[in-house]
Image: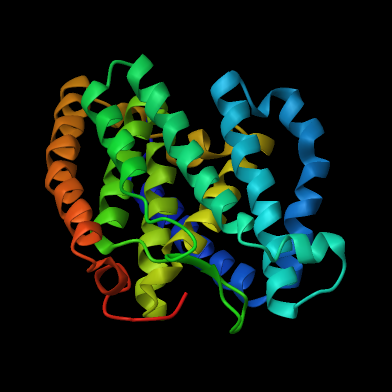
Length: 277
């Protein structure tokens, strides 16, 4: 599809701005966010009408939407100290391990898919991203301050490596959606910078990805019509991009392990913010 440059600028710029507003709204109006994502299950008939094709897209959609619903319930439960068996169940430490596991699963889904596509070096980068994810409950929590945010102390380097790895994966697996993926990943990177709270990266990533996945599931033709990036694809670029990602993450793995071994992680992962767990 021959799309003029001005259309990319308008569509990508508009989508990026919209995503920033969505993350802010989902954070600030946490009760609305909770009910909104529960209500998205009513759109499943649209998914069945052709919005989702193939096992990977079904697995990706369900592994994003359902945990986003759990995030909303956990935020309400922990922030408001709700009483009752279900609410109190969501206040236990297992919920942080659940979120950790879901992030791990989402990365591994794409890593396995990358491997089947022959993007071996990028798939190795994805695997090492899983290895270097900070563990709960020391580096994950649901804040008791407003607005009950899901906090994860990932490092700036990990966030950037995740972004370039994910972009390379989309470039390989769904090049038509590459431009829209740039928007959701850029919004997740920029939002914490705007708020001067880098620990909100995972929260921003949750809501930008969930929004994107929902739109794709319901209106699969929207992004190809607005910002089809399939013409940007180049097998040589994909290959060397994956190699660069693999090279970049190797020293980070050693740094990550050293921080844990030397007992420096409590400070370095929190960027100098020492907090009790």
